[in-house]
View 1: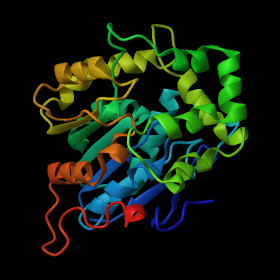
View 2 (view 1 turned 60 degrees about the horizontal axis):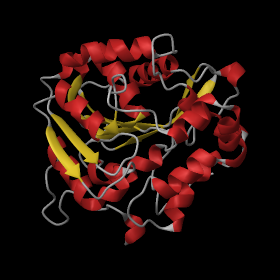
View 3 (view 1 turned 90 degrees about the horizontal axis):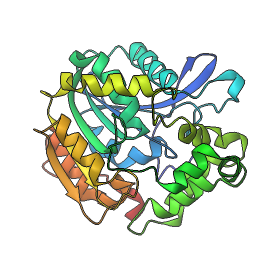
Length: 310
């Protein structure tokens, strides 16, 4: 099941890994500079559709769906552990099969930032530049407390029931993660992959896997990533930040600037967690210009953006 081609006009590709099928987009010229776009929870590659449309004329856009998300397989716990370490390994396997010959642009949102930067600090020579979209790759800032809604899901049986039985996480996110109007069709596309309790396992496990303190699975990876972010400090970096995000808020932005003080910061005071949606064509064009896309004299750098609004 896929969204309408008008919203998601891409060809599907699949990687067999761990006996599972990982879905990904591979759009644009094969010899074009690669752009890797990594989504978070509870989104999927659909989140990047407009950025892919803006870039694929000149760039090779690689956009995976993490296992359990989007159009990838959604296995039960006995077939996949849904841990950060496995996510990074999946990404490394995918990039190994694509035989990319040039350094890539890393674009990360939400969990995609944690996964992507954990890979990037292990492979700094393979990174050309970074785009940070309301995400983290370091422990929670001391001034920040875990939002109660996330604690409910992460730490209680009630929260788990609400997410897996009633699709509370993806369903609520499709309402509150936007701060600007979107069509019913777009909202439906965000929740479409998570249409049964079995298919919602990743939306729950991602929250349960949030590493908060020493001893939590993945916390060692998070610390190691933070300690090695300096290896990327000389890379061009754009931080596009929705300031109405109730999770990734000002303390997180402040930490990014500690690590990447040279970053170009694009603050969006009226945008929420789904910053690419709220930021619209202007933000897409800002990212495209940062990456270095050349304008088409007839259509400009962002032609094809937001087909659902056309």
